[in-house]
Length: 576
Image 1 (tube, helix red, strand yellow):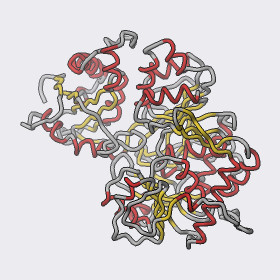
Image 2 (cartoon, helix red, strand yellow; image 1 turned 120 degrees about the vertical axis):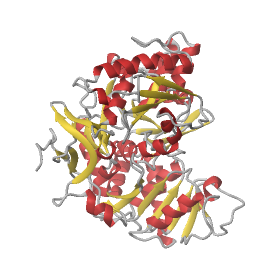
Image 3 (cartoon, one colour; image 1 turned 90 degrees about the horizontal axis):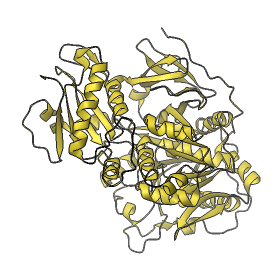
């Protein structure tokens, strides 16, 4: 029934029993070192482990006095900040469950998630978030990280009161918490748009760090420049706990990853030794770095040990640039349900397209008959909260987690092929794997950020193309932008002309004529987290893209549809 099981090459280190114990160990080892820094007036100011830990204990103690007890949940609606970090850890290390959600959600969604999550407590970052909280919600206590003078919640408690100095007596964090206790609930939309609440335990989170401890060298001497949002597993589990667990300094990126120029300014101040990001951001930073010798030397500074990339493959020209300068490039794969990492690439092994490495210690992979990847290990979630229907489908009878990803095993590890539910059939019943075509097109052109291939029930597949506007505008004003084999277009019209040749080349490499892209549309507009066409980790959400750009797809297939954005039709074959 199952093909060969892919097992890790290394043994798993001992797993710390719970988050409270991890914090207690770290304050002993790193008491006077900085754990977290935020930027104020163009300088970074930090908090030491001793101060950090004392604050966590005060928050936990005050929450307990206000009625918070073991197993209670608190929804947290905030941007990344020190107060959020301490609050989450205080909740998790005192027997509670934190439920972080995207700070910019609209009121109806916040109401729905709060009610579904079973939360009794609510934290908001600022007046903006507080203004989206419905008066109809049944909330035991509501807290704000910012002080807000005028609001509709007369009993609102401010963070400064929650962390105020006080006599705690013999109060302690929950050092006896079971590794199997749930401490984090994280909502995931997945790339296909169905939102679920993933329940994660102390063991899930800390087994990940025990595994990474075997595979790479991260310690208290490292510096991370961090922008990835904490309501999402890549930033909120993988990056954040990598820093905290190892004692490394985490610097909050003041622009939250939205402005490549600001990231580069902060890069200059921090000189990160490790950076976690997604390909779209790396592309933008690389473009800026190539604008001058000074920027290039700043970006590829000698202390930079490795970069980690996820969500999609890093373009080869950028990956090669890092590797040629002695900076390791590591890629990983996993899901929120697997906390999130399952595999890592080995920087000593030549990177292969689509290959995301071998299982981390403690994790095993196997393939079902249809090629679906299944996972077993201490990183696999407890299950979805309040969703028996989904839980019944997601686990095999012998307890393996079904990822929904199709893959195959190679000598260098797991190769991803496609999402199981994205494979579609044409009108002639021939099967199309859109991810294969999307990767081929993206591999031909560095000036594209995203590609969506569609064609279910049609005669031939088509493609929607979304440009990297940063790179296009940089080409227009900067003659230093040089990409091997590329004409480096300076506007959308030129890019459309270039893309015709690129996609023609892709088509010529495809033996099956039915699988060749018939027509494409370059759209002068981007995808975003706000319109739900991207996840928080900047992965494309195909179903949402198809919904938002439905008229564009229909127009490519010859229907008379009005399109708001500027666009360029790129015909590739004679007939649809």
